[in-house]
Length: 254
Figure: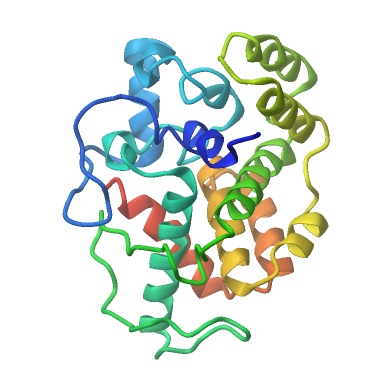
């Protein structure tokens, strides 16, 4: 059976034994500059082995170039991928509500309590909230990973030659047949924005789709920012909220 939560964790680099670091569900803060800089320095200095040779250092480092994929280093070490994305989305929504006078999105579940905006490097615990509801973890993780792959493919960053090279490496990554099939199918037939909008049944899921997409690509790149803007518009996410998602992702590694 496909363990999509584990697969998402590998894509985000949350299961690579990099050593050190604390969970962002609490006091720890990662070291260094932006998330983009972190992985860039690792790969330039040590090559993909710096990310432990798994998906985070092999396939995922080719597939994505955004803020995720091992770029959070030890901070995300103990997190499952779904918990990391959901925690970032939850934090951004908390901060958005605080800045907007606790204005909830239409259809969103009320937050249990609205704290002050989370400090940089900390994430609220999403488990049991509408951001990671019990019994839906695998479905949410699958949607997050699909959103990441769709974003990475959206601007043509992965051309046909690169895609074939990635397919050629899959057999070396220790994935079972179902996981291999999932990755290949998603890359060959990535979800469209229409598909993602239809799959995001709640405002919280929509925020997670956007958050996962931000982690997969570089929002400062014009073509990729255009994709994110279109995605946000179709998901009906306010500009202030999507800006908070990007700030929260950057702050995690600040």
